[in-house]
Image (cartoon, rainbow over all chains, first blue to last red):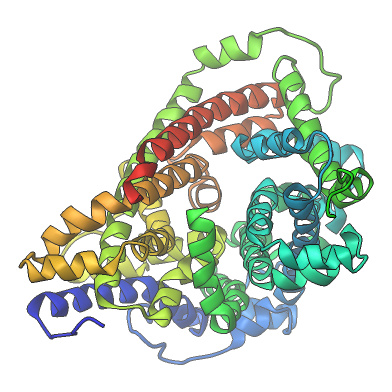
Length: 294
Length: 293
């Protein structure tokens, strides 16, 4: 263990880190602070660290818990907003994609790492080559395709391109399965297990860590998704939080946006990932060691 | 008596691969072919596409707006990647020498977890010309107000700064993970030899981090080229096209003007640029792998 002497350079170092933490966190503080400010106070009360007359009305109105008249009185534009619904949509979207994609990619990663079949490396190479294609290139035809299938404004259309696979997850999980010791699996073969038995009873339970890692990363990216759901899921019933925030901004007048409502909605869009960070922070932080060094 | 006959898991393998192969064929392979086809047609989503040869591409080469969007993207990438990488390197080095705190790392990761849309809104508010907190701060110093997102000179630097804010912590943690692989005893013996922190950073950390740094740099470069969300929320390409980056250009061509064929051709040009970057990435990785040995 290094000795931790207090030296001038250490003090300066800690001061810089403290400043960086303040810069990282302050905007979030300002977001919550604005969300708790009555819209009527916006011109007189927009500089202090705390609101003069804190209120939760901005939250209740963007969650659709107030009447339209109440929402309008509290600074709303009068357009219908229901962030409770959008949050639920986003959670369903993330859960569907993270759950199925992780399972399917684990199956494929296992097959590429352990099973023997003709053309294995060729097929894997083709899948991986998709990593080099920028998403917007496939996004245009995918939009046309989903439109031809008549799946615009449905959850099915929104999750379709990502629920079955993503090349990175296949690559990542194959790497992991390659590193698993073979002897346990070989013992299971001698016990009369087929590939499915080994996969479900041995390989999957042994890879809880990487599966959670890739699942969490997928949840985070799905939570941030914007362009695809913007094209495919604009309708009220299927709108995700990100799309809804964009629509909410457009509905509010350009001259004076409804900042208190927007910040309340923004706060709501941060809460679920904040919960994730509080409970899974260690895993998330460690996942960067994995995914970063590939 | 193992492996008396060579194992062939062909039947099982197809079942294992079925969902992924279907997903790949339908949502990667098929659209890739279709995208290539669109790029040589006059498709508008309303007509039946007819073949026009290389017309979209020659048109692109003559299109000032296309070149302008590439220029604007380049400017953004330089500002964003430059500031983000330097800051992240500094933060990672500080953390590496000072602390292993998971709480600190989780805090730095927070902006990365938040949707770009939220970040765009949040900073629109902080940078607002009339009521924004930053202009309030400038005001107390007797400066401003600055139209951070409405002034053509400031708009792109502001967006680059917003995304630097959002991704520096994440980048720093990737670099920090790389630094943790450097053997600790190197620092201890350097300290015995009387080296100061700056010297250790230049002589030990930087050279041994090079492979990780190269990888992180190119991955973030490729991400940076694809800037869209922040622009779509805050400036929508304005003022006067100052923030009309290539992704936004393609998006508008396709979904606002319905020039799908033209947009597909532009997307292929972007793919080529990113392809070159990826090749450079592979080169860099191979060239520097031996350093950690």
